[in-house]
Amino acid sequence: MAKFKKKKSPPTPGPDDSKKVSPDEQKDIPETEPVESKDSENSSEPNVNQAEKSEKDKKLNKLFWLRVGFAVLAGTAATFLFNDIADMEEKRWTSIGFMIIVFIITIVIAKGMKMQLPSSDRKKIVTQGIGSYIFIYLFMWILTNTIVHGSKVATDIVSQVR
Image 1 (cartoon, rainbow, N blue to C red):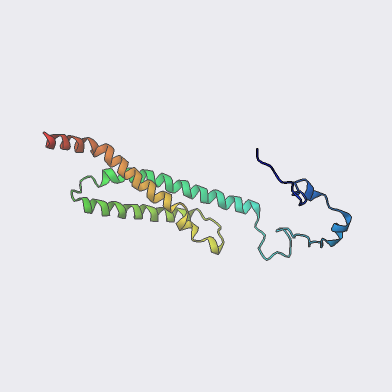
Image 2: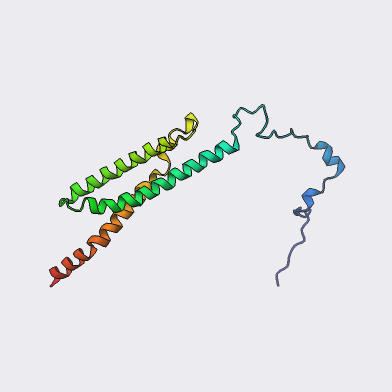
């Protein structure tokens, strides 16, 4: 069996030991300054009314979901609107142009919502939900193209194999 040496150092303090402070040690601890709350009148940040912030967030949320809905509709519509274009490259660029035009329409709708945004947040009208819009548009366009034209491609492949 292994022999263990006795520890000669004092034991490591546990989590409860830190709470016990002797009166002598308490004198050495300097007092801290009180923490000012953000609601203080001396704060450099302007006070924002919670109702206004809530209304702004609701309108931005509404704009986000408006763009998601437009992306679903426009991506699906692009499959059928540009079905007659034979050249794939032309079809691709036409669909991307259509996507940009629909996005500009959502910007016009957002400006019509008359959101009261501070000047630092004006770009949110354009940037709110742009990534979701692009990816959902492309997803719906690819999905509906696959559903509509997928069986034709599968039969073409089978006929080439035979």
